Image 1 (cartoon, helix red, strand yellow):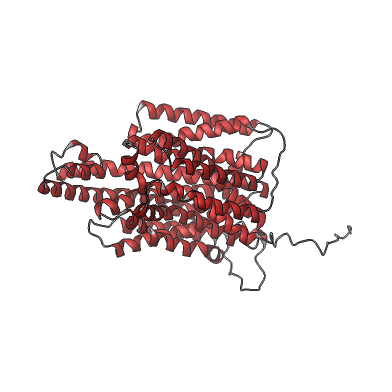
Image 2 (cartoon, one colour; image 1 turned 60 degrees about the horizontal axis):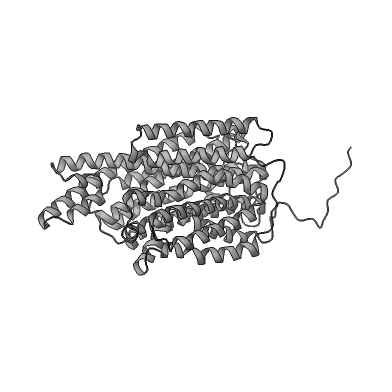
Length: 528
């Protein structure tokens, strides 16, 4: 027999987690809300920006997209640097950069300045998101980690839909700069909590910094996101789009080849051979494709077809937010009871059902009925986020958590921008076709999009204006059905894929309070 292992009775239980873990989780969730709000808060301020900065439509697109482009492009780089230099340092640096850029952006006096500052804000945010999940993995033990990730997941989704509400509320009382100024006190409070609560988590400074990997990933993702974002405007098969797509493919292929052959890679791409990691990424991409595609058309429908103010239109997403918060916060229980395979597939199927309901709306559909469809979509998304996010980090060694979190962030952003691009293209084509059919000889600018139609109508005689806006509203609502049916089909396909491709796992009863927790290996609910 071997020598028995001597246990130190004074040593902390490694599964108990850090003493300040729950207070730290609150600080991490606040950090996540700040940066995710900025993905959507600006949408309500775009009309005010157009007037104040004399911004063209192209300028407005870049003001909106510069943040997303840099954020997605830098996530892998930020995750790698955070793993090397420490996640606490990465989080604090990212929040500081984000706040400083926000303060300067609030005083921008040209569209070009604001575009550049939005890019800097995206850079700061890229260092925040992967750090939050990585710190959770480090501070929470196996028993409590699923619950912590469920709360984190609910926060991530809430930030997206809180953005339009916050933007609308601010613009009711203040100028467009308020959507940037609000970040400063929020970040200041979050930074104070981060400094006081988050323990020092040392990085792993082994070997040289993978500079080629950093550059290839950042440039390749920037090109890929840009071609997706600009595709509907330029044309998917235009020379510029095809050239940029080819550049993105070459850069990302070079990144993969370099990471697979270098002795000290920034990203271990062999992670994707783990079934749980691949399933997590695919699930999150489908989820955010459907969500961002829906929000893109739904906010226009509320503001232009129903004539809601920015605040009221923002409140239109509240049923989604409340339903998602309810299901996400308890998703660890549903996953434990039904198994992650059925929980994720059921969540995607529920999203598809809600999207199908939204596809049946009419020009005069009352808000109460709209709320039901959005709540169903939110409830479905809440069931997906936590098990999908937990799968990747649970299937890998703890030291790979920062990169797993960063990769999940990348696929979420790519899914979101692709959803906006595809749904935008579908809705735009359907709108033009239906408006030209309903109103032959419609003035050229009015058939471009619904805002243009309303702008043209403002300069027409009253009877002609009513005729144009009525036809345009009906054309857009019908076109929106094409977009939301597309999202529903993608979500339903994702549900079927989850049932077919995710490994079947045994469901297990949720332990009663005070009873033993499940074995640690059961946490890896999606691992193949």
